Length: 415
Image 1: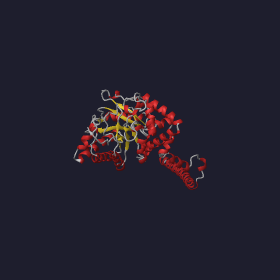
Image 2: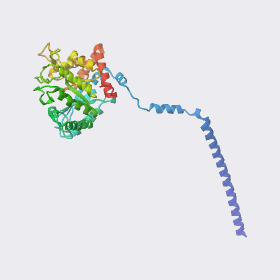
Image 3: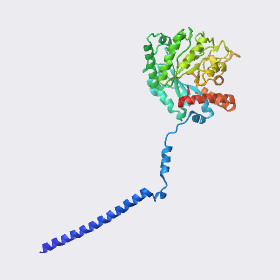
């Protein structure tokens, strides 16, 4: 009986405990129901929104502000200082020295790595693709702003004038031998392979093809042919192929120096421009998708023979008048022929003066050879920026050139 009573008591206690649990469950369900009601009210009426700082409109504004901002060429141009504008017109030299075994020690001239110039021209011999890629990446990393990022150019005519001809690059025959290849498909394939290699390296501009027609013993196998139709046909194939790989070809050497008798690197010389020379440039510029033009330092006999074409507003002006949208490159301004002074033939003009005259003539990208130093380029930029701030005519020429450069580099809206 006592056992039964104990079981009975335990049973009653169990019922009591179960009853308490049911009460708790009902209370919990009730609270949950109230919470659900409040959430529903808040969803439709949002009575608590005023207690929070961030509203939906604020969130939308934050999302909008995170979208990338696309700047126009004019927007970028307005952000440039006087010195930065002058620097954008400069193509500083980058020398890659393959003779140094230690890869980390391979040097570049200080010009390219200490100045934020608009362009960088690669110089050197037997340069491998590995070294070229490394130096291009390194040079880009030294620029403070991507807005000032340079375009990389290289001489790539073939033969002796092929800077990138080390390991990883196809050796191109001279321009004369290339033009002599009868199988046009073979000719095209050589150029396509080379263009792909340059693109993979990071090259933006190829200083070729050579449009000079004649039998100059100075240029030798840099000349394609003494036949204008052959030069026109092969040069057009060259420009179309390299453009298809997003590399800008630069026609040279305007207005045509196929009959010069002196090396313009060491002496001043004259060239007689024929009607066919003019027609050749007209044809290539009109038929090519995108090209630039390099102006030579030869004096033009049937114009003003005492002034290098590159420093003559008349010579460059004829080109700009007909084709105002193409970029005009000078030949290397440290060449002896560029410093020729007809009023004082025994004394060469300094590099600052030559650079200023090139801009005044209408040149837009100023190229310098591998021996030009950082200090020389700094002096050019400093002196010409002072002139920019004080000479309205010079300022207008610089502004016109730099805006064209910026549009080419960042929006692709010209050339």
